Image (cartoon, rainbow, N blue to C red; front, side, top):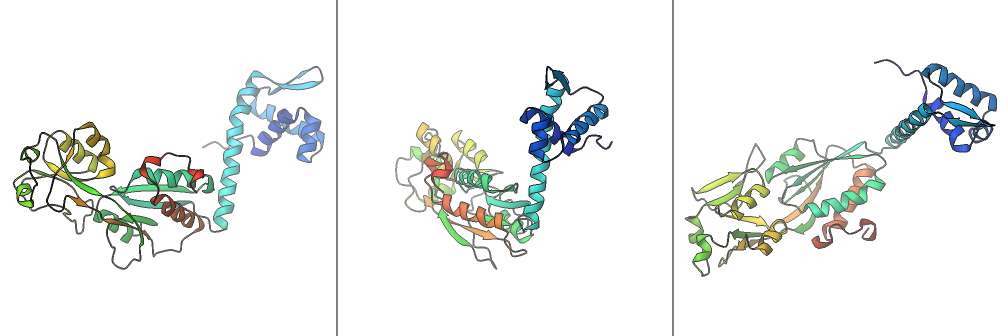
Length: 308
């Protein structure tokens, strides 16, 4: 890669000349001599091979090429400044990245609010979000490739912070044969029906949470796919209520009238990695996740600053 001929300092100098209205004003703003500013801009033009400024009366104004290059240079200088700020924050212990793994059943709306509130406080810290199902969250945390984890299980060897519960309900299409019985249903009624279950993304010890043991089982890779199948009349499933409220309202899904077990409320927990101490950005994100965990889901996209 060819090294750039023009330095960031030269671009900053040109910006100062334009923004402050002339060489003398730029020299004062930059605490440099006017001759130094003039030489820097002249040297830039020689290096680039195109004129950047022209004299209009007693004032230097941008040429057409100068306008284009200056506009592009502003983002270049801004990015360099942000990079220097990030290096300074890292020197102070600020993380460059926080890795968050979340069970797919946890409400996305709450995460959106937490991450939106985190952005203006992040100081350039990125968030790498990863979704897993059931024991997949635990495996990612144990493998040391996550800083934070939100799981519906108690993970051995970790002290999790208790969060809200997520309600799962047993549902089927209104025209499904289970609804045609027009009575309270038992587990025996379900055992003879096709059940749609979500594949555990864990590899070591996958779990069949909610499966009744029937051979009539279709396994899918995501909650969204399960909801699509069941909405089309294919079997029944336990699904997070917050994900299917619209389908229930529109009449393509209906809650099964089970005599028991029709609703489940697993509690979710927030875990942090034991492999490294929590940095300031991670601690801020933890606080925001906990703050928005209890927020009403119908207010998911309200202005975050009002709730912090």
